[in-house]
Image 1 (cartoon, helix red, strand yellow):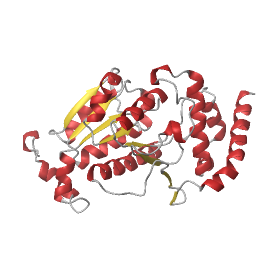
Image 2 (cartoon, helix red, strand yellow):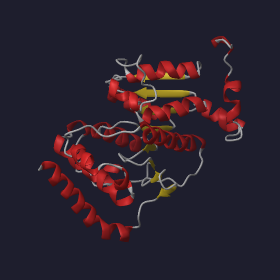
Image 3 (tube, helix red, strand yellow):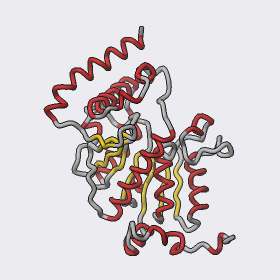
Image 4 (tube, helix red, strand yellow):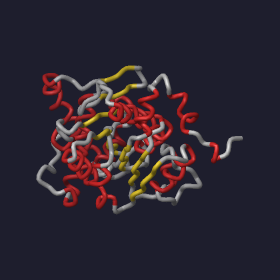
Length: 297
């Protein structure tokens, strides 16, 4: 059995070759990625990036692992429950690559966000908090960094927002455009969530694969978001693919609108064209209102 001292990066990354060239592997080794939120999708993305040989990771989270995380978060184990997510994730990443350069940020990560974004070749949004996302996107645009993200969707999804593309708050119509990130109120959070839900229901077949009654309870704030390991982990892997493409300067078909992967029908669902979306949007909004009214009854 090989000892920790016997670790060799070339041997560790050798089977990557063919998917990437030796020069690209070295580029990954020299790259830095900032992952903000390392629970579900963010944690799965971190796992793939660490195993792909990315050399430097900045990991940020405000939470500790809980029992409810065990169903989907790749670094959540019975022996990590109670541990800080970013610290536990970093420790297990070191078991994959002892040479990995890791920076861990806790609840004070907003104080360090500019430095973290500036030193990174790509930014991954693994948070599920509107205020945190606003800070991450606004900082990334100002520093001309691309952000890899995913929708709150029952289907795996991914989208990449480059500095010249509209951020989610602009593209989806969040009521936060003139609000400081740390001044977002509960009404704005609720409205932004509904904007995202409208986009997901309008541009994917997600409604066919989830209990819409429970989804209405989520939208009404009466229960936590539903999450399922195959969906969450697949999404994290899609995010890792796009992150690696950014680091290597590769072109992909993913833009700020992104796409959804439907594993039930084995196809990719791209956003509808503007005309079709305009026709269907009133129907989707009516359906959402009906669901919320039913949940409130």
